Image (cartoon, rainbow, N blue to C red; front, side, top):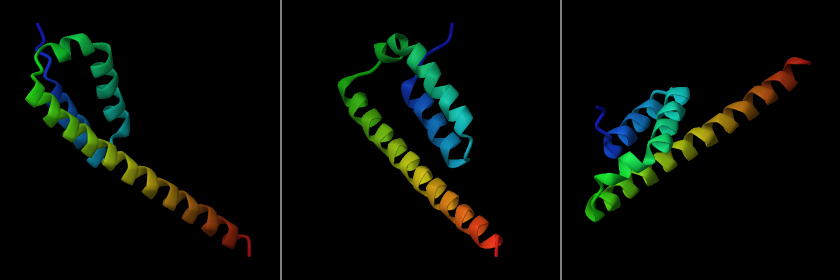
Length: 85
C-alpha cells in the first residue's frame, strides 16, 4: 500500500519546476488532486501551516516561470519581426 505524504509530493513538484519539467510537475499535481482524501488524513495543523508556506513558494516559482516564458516569447516575436528586414 502506498503511503501518501503531501510534503514529499510538493517537494517533488518544486524540484520538477526548478528543472523545467513542467509536465512532470503537472502529473504530480494531478496525483495529489486524485488522492486528496488520502493525503489530508495525516496532516496536523502545524504541518498544514508549513505545507501552505511550501505551496506559496511553489506558486512564486510558477509565476517566475510564467514571466520568463512571456519575456522569452516577446523576445522571439521581436526577433522574428526584425528578421524580415
